[in-house]
Image (tube, rainbow, N blue to C red; front, side):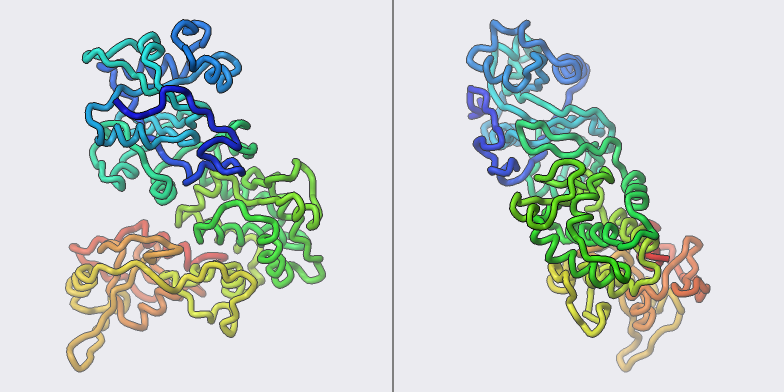
Length: 503
């Protein structure tokens, strides 16, 4: 038997387990919940109490002391519930999940290697009589008495295996699993989850972005800004916000930070003669469907003083931020904004000033030269040089060995006193902001000159495996390949995206 409390716990904006701002203390966790098979009546249970919901009036005789709280959660009288049988051991995965789950956590329902629905936990309680009447008993005469009350149920289909593999479950999800808030944030890009609006009882309203996916996000970035507008304020604010996502900062920034960091960008890169009014993009971007403003009514352009007084915050809506945590989508978004709005701007200086200097090289390292004279500019909140992931030296040795220490671009060996010198170059840089993997398929064997050019995006590999010069597209070489060294096309495509940004 787990130690889940017997009475239903409701967490409101000021409830236990939440901060006064409405966020779950410690962050939202994932509760990975197998739906079960037809043999254990999983699809029938799911249809009955999650898809359709049960009418509380039909179960009034077994609600007991939980009746008042259930009616508070479900004022329309239709409750969406899911239950779990008691764990068979005190410290197995299921028992830990039952003990650790919290109101505000996100449930991902799983079936046949696929996530099929998501929901938000609104209450947690234990009621054996209710469970028996709703779902009956299993073959061991146990019932699903550890119950969660659910809201924001959205059905979808997404491959579960990438996420499960990262969690050490490479074949299937066998039982209830709790994923910590920190691991959830780290793995958000491993599964496509639809956005939902948050219930008023849990947090302040968040704009819905129905169907927001990669294509819709990039479309919104193009259409919500005016390429020939007078100020460039909106695309500059978006570039800055993308930088916050890349730096893993809170997606909603207080007005004071927005004003302090975005204001100088508007002054330096806005069109000549345009007034510097950061409060305009701060408020107006909400109409794009990808931007949230907390504390300001729809359609209102509050002045800086009012924004300070009310403690306003703004940034990408949760679904847009989740998409932008993916390195490729983030790079595509930067490309869209640069190509649409800043073709006549020193892109190296702009990205360095916006805190996105890591996108000026394939490795993500910066040396200060991009900003001109090493100036940090108005935004210096997330330098990209410093602690970086360690490299697997065995992979370095292997890629050099396969190519006999000869450059894959120019095919020229570089002779030194002790033999021949070559360098292992990551195609999609490891570490922030590119987050590439340290694996053989993400490595090239290059000479120092072509390593420097490849890293600084002066050359790139096209789809036909020719090596081209970035500034004019001239074919320089054919990339030399080895049958035992399969270069990942996805990493080459990512590098090409960086090299062609803004073109």
